[in-house]
Each structure stands twice: as C-alpha cells, then as structure tokens.
Length: 129
Image (tube, rainbow, N blue to C red; front, side, top):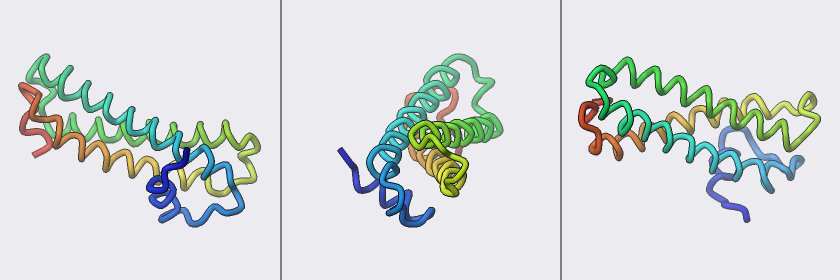
C-alpha cells in the first residue's frame, strides 16, 4: 500500500523517481513509517523517561543534542533501507540526498512531537521553549 503524501514529500526535494520504481513501491513508505516511529520513541524517552527522572535533562542544549541524534538516526534509516532494497547502491545518486531529506523531515517531526509531548513531562515542560 502506497501513501501518496510520503511520495510527494520526498519527491518534492529529491526530484521525481520515475526510473526507480522501488522508491515508490517500498522505500518511501518503509522509511517514513520507521522514521515516525523512531521520532515518537525518542520523544517519549526524552520527555517521559529523562524528563521525569531528573531535572538535569531539561536544558536547551540537551534538546539540541537530541535533535542531532534524531537527524543521524533518520539519515541512517533512509540510507540503510534504500541500500538494502536497491542492492547496487553505488550507481544511485539519490540515496545520499534521500538520507539528508529524511534527516530534515525527522527533525521537523521531532519538533512537532516535542510540542505535543512536553506537557506530560515533569521537568521538561519548558523545553524547547
């Protein structure tokens, strides 16, 4: 099952992938779902786990470090799924840009989920703002 919104968001930046049907058939949807699940898990760890444990992790720089972790994981998810699905990844010039775009979308998703989940934290209610 293909979700057109993921195709639109990824093709908006990396361009059309008509020559690569694997992107539309499996890579875009798999990467998007894995990235959203990863972002939700990291947000829950940050706000529920660390945000209720000690007041040490409620600073802005901890949140920024978490953004870098989310971006790295987002890039890794996109790169590994694309390489695993395509097989011969050396000839595909869209894998690296796809990884960076997924990292950016992961950051934006993390920011969105941060505003939704920060209310359930005890010490991180004012993080990021």
